Length: 167
Image (cartoon, rainbow, N blue to C red):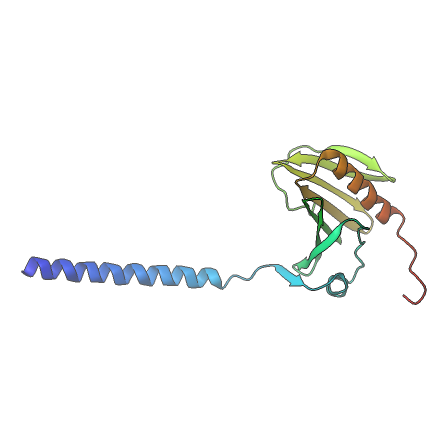
């Protein structure tokens, strides 16, 4: 009988200790803040970052807006089932968020030299154009459509549209 009682008490004690460890670990993990702040519009992105993000023309559909550490603007688009992420920040560095690419191909479009590569079924391009750096990633998109999109984006950046009167 003593052995049964000791066994039950040991199990209860172990369960209590394990629960305490689990709760402590899960609580500390939940205190870590995400560097991504979800927003409602491109105007909010521009307000948070202080620069004006180029907008893709139709048929690309805006789906989400966010900033990363209030320094990287990020817009997500959809096009024919593809998911596209476009980022912009001050500087010259790769801000694509895709790690593990050892060597890029160089492509020049609209006078802008972009680093491009396909990595784990993700098309990746990034390019500096003073004073900003940009990145473009896409999944579920063929190479021809990705280069067409990159051509459109570099065209928007190299020759931004004139603001309409009243803007």
